[in-house]
Amino acid sequence: MNTQKFENPTHYRGGCCCASKSSTAANTRRSVDSDSDIPLQRLQVQGATCGGCVRSIEQALCSVSGVSDACMDLATGVASVVGMVESNALIEALDRAGFPSTQIN
Image (tube, rainbow, N blue to C red):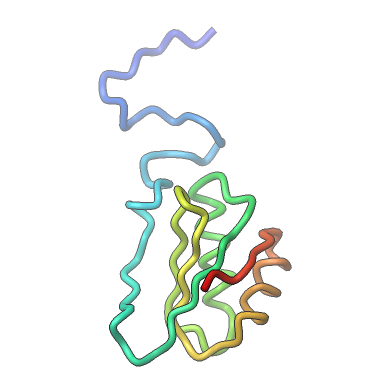
């Protein structure tokens, strides 16, 4: 039985094996400029449970031609994508990565 006590709760690694303080949406979010002339698309993504999932989703989205930036909010399950790209290409990339998604208006 693990009896280790954590004085600082940010050092506790609970949930998924790769969950940590850095896996929260606030810490993994990159800046996405919604004031630019480049379109912003939002997707509701299913199945993300940890920081590793967030990284996989962001990498899958950034691998799509035309994407300038992508960030995933783990708390809400919403991915934001900046770039000149069709939403179907984003949805297909996420499906291949194992994360079903739908476009949000």
